[in-house]
Structures are given as structure tokens and as C-alpha cells.
Image (cartoon, rainbow, N blue to C red; front, side, top):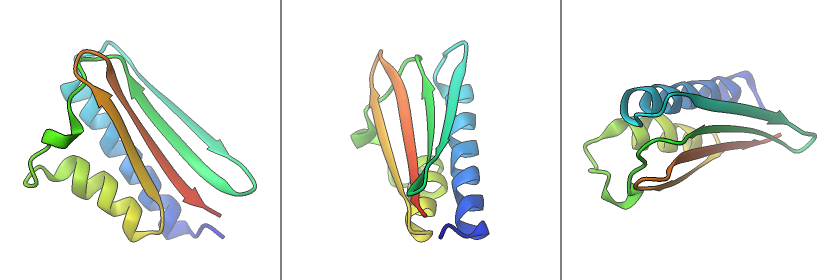
Length: 97
């Protein structure tokens, strides 16, 4: 079962993704969707902004790596980042129940 600490970690990771999108994407809006099923809890944060190449994120930039990806891993979840320059960004967070 998903515990309060894990769910809190997902909420914090989603908050960081929303903050990053608001600060850096240049998009007029950020879409957030959460889905709770019998097996998983998933959260999607999407923007149609400028996008970026995730492979070029410097290790010293802890917002994406530390506050999103590593946080989800520490609590047994995953974070998938899909972004392309000029096409926006989607971050998918998932925790198993």
C-alpha cells in the first residue's frame, strides 16, 4: 500500500515540476492530472512551453534530479521526463499501491 510518506513525496515532486514549468517553460498554462487506480497513483504535469533536452541537465541542477527524480526513487516510485526543445514537457510520476 502507498503510505503517507510516499504520497507526500509524490505531491512534493509534482509541486517542483509545476514550479519549474511556471518558471522556465514560457507556457501560458500548466496542466496537472492525477489518477488513482487499484494498483497505482499517477500524476502528470504538462506544459506546451519551450521544452528542453533532459540529457543536458547539469548534475548540479537539483530541481529535476533531486526534487523530482531522486525523491520518487527514494520512496519506491518513478519519474519519467519527456521533453523536446520547442515542444513542451511532460513529467509522469508513479507510485505502486
